[in-house]
Length: 494
Image (cartoon, rainbow, N blue to C red; front, side):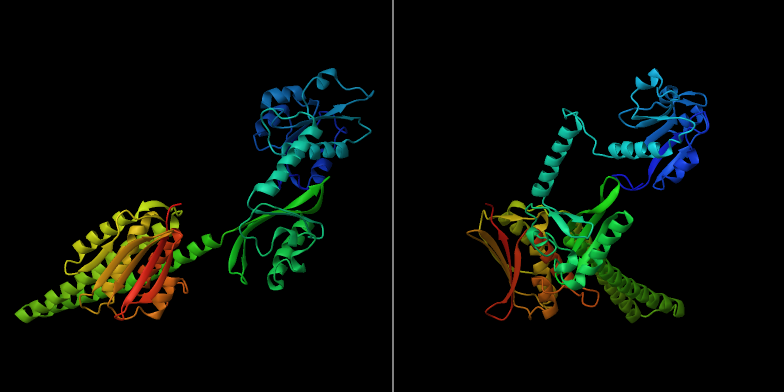
């Protein structure tokens, strides 16, 4: 017996007839390798063993302690939820009239000379397959043909409207049906290019086709599904999550049914979070070690010399100032990490925003934090753009990056915002030395931040992520006086 629709082992509650020879319970168990059989010895025992996980109940009509009707009442069996197959003794070819009147899934006539094991197994297979079919409610046709036609219509719409890569493959793992919906990006080709081909027939590059093809064959050979498998396609640097289940007809596996969904962005986010967490842990460990070291310097000097000179006290003040700067830097890193985690974890929600108000608000906040900093601002009023909620951090990070690269002096910074037809442009200009190549590549998306190169690129990486979430873009240039000019563009509404 093959695994019924729904996949996985199924549960059978078996209470044999009270007359031996009518049904061989042990033989029936052996004929159900894909089932967990709960063998009961009496009506009361069967009622105690029954629960919602049972897919099918099998019993004699007359059982130890009562009848199949009593069992339905004692266990609270619901005919619409759990099918009940009953073996009825029929010495003269007739069955008890009370059995016919009940809503049993099937009645299997049997005599002591004719073991009913094979017939019962077939009834179980039918009953469980129907139970594991999609559950229906409402005004649906009652006859099987009309119901199947309705289901076929729904399946057609799944394959033509759901924007996901769905497929059906035959016993040779050839694609015989492919979803026709407007999937934005399939694994490699358009739907028609798949039909009649196996994965190893050029559907995907040969170096990437072998494992998916072997998975198809494994499902066909064993009848075991492969669920939620993550697949990486290096030639396109893309990830997919794929499920494949056996396609069955009349109890035999005749192919594969599958669905595949791209998860490249999800995997990218996981990787970026891993890198950011590594970076912050590394930086925090270094800073905390430095704090601990300076504290030990002060403590050791106090322990070794009770008569302290003014110079020593001045030196202690310098150490405390240094420790204070380290802890400030540490707090800043933690805050930045949280901002990045929030940006990466949240679903992007670009919406029309008053970009003029956002930029002006950030300029005021920066002026309060850096009192000596002077910014030449040219902000066009009432500029609206489609941007993510964290767009305010973009301006702050770009200004702080200029301060960090000013080599201890007060930099000259200019910020402009102008609407330009279908887009809004923010420019942040400075008179600093060129942004390092590595950080420039982070900003433009040519490089991912990694463990070996992290410095201030972490803030620029946050800028890039926030802008990408807003469906905007970042460009790098140089000013007329040799400084940096970072341009951030957001789309305008409509």
